[in-house]
Amino acid sequence: MSAEGATAVRRVSWVELYFDLIFVFAMRQAAHTLVDEPSWRGVLTAFVLFVPLWWTWIGFVILYNRSGAEDAVSHRLFVLAGTLPCAVAAIEVHGGSHGDTAGFALALAATRAVLAVAFWFTSDVSGPAGRRLTLGYVLSTVVFALSALVPTPWRYVVWLLMLAQEAGLLLLGRKPRRARTGQEETLRAMLKPPSEATLRIDPAHLAERFGLFMIILFGEIVISVGSAAILVEDRGLAYWIGVLSGFVLAAALWWIYFGSAAEINEHVLRASGGNPAVAYGLYAAGHLGPAFSLLVMAAGVSLALEHDPPGSAGWLIAGGLAVYLVGTQAVVPPLSMRFGRLVRIVAVGATVGLALLQPWITAVGVLLVATIWTVVAAALVTWHHPGRLGEVVADPLAIFRGR
Image (cartoon, rainbow, N blue to C red; front, side, top):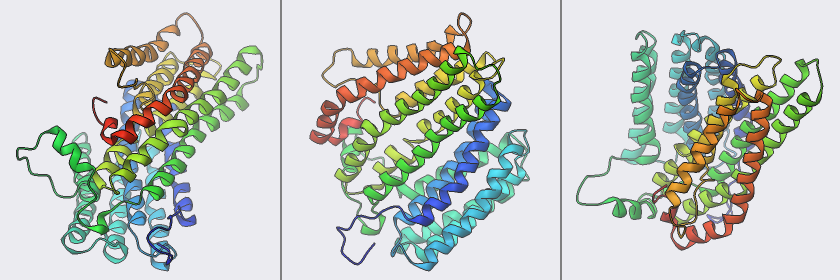
């Protein structure tokens, strides 16, 4: 942080933006696996590859968020060093989609080695917490490397266990005691600042970093539209409906996030004093679904614009949209609304049900209907945002209750 004091706002640095360029490549590779295999198995495979990449990115985000001087050469060197194994992991995504994940596992191990050294030398987290963090990444390095020798699907189980322990070390700290505290007491504890100042998450930096990364993922839909549109020779009415629908869909998705979810999430994290558990719930874990859903929709849009789109194109668009609306809380009605939970279930079910239209209309038609549905959702989010924000301002825990 700058020398101007603790009130200075930390901004996302240029080296962080450069680091994210590597993940643009990785995300594009993950989306491409869905285009190659547009099935439920393809979605599951892409998700299995996406989650370790996501938590790798989270590790570097938290590293820089908790760092000292932003312009320190050591910080830049560690981030740049991390781009090398991350780039290898991105390249290995293609092989991973065909079951060859040994190289992917070794690349992930190398990223953990960089994080272990970086947290030891640059992180502000000290004492037992700092040692646990470093040792946790050392353990992940060893286990991810050894997982290359483990046959699938057990290899994925090993990854899941390591990612769970990384998440705990990064943002959850020690496992809370299961005493007589109920859910309400647990939630109230999340609104208290962390006991150690070095564990505090900078809300402005984290919100901006995630916002910029979400823009990258919105861009994947735009790129999918542009790439598919160039290959189409018959540029009739259906062509232009599909192209324009894809661009409007990306814009409406952007509106939903930055018109409501981004502001509410940052407000709750600020209200908690940068509590790591809140950062975990709203950002690290809370953005996982919406981020992956954007890649799923990008693949669905790309397939819908093909000359002979598969029947799964509509499911990718509708299913991805449903996950995105849930993850960004775009279908959360006001607390005062009667049968609000039922309304939410119906809205999500109707969104998924858009895929059932494909036997009667074309994939481009499903894309058009999904786009109109998303525009309506964006309008409703804008309409309800002042009231929703007021609920969260009055009680930040409203974002967690019954959601």
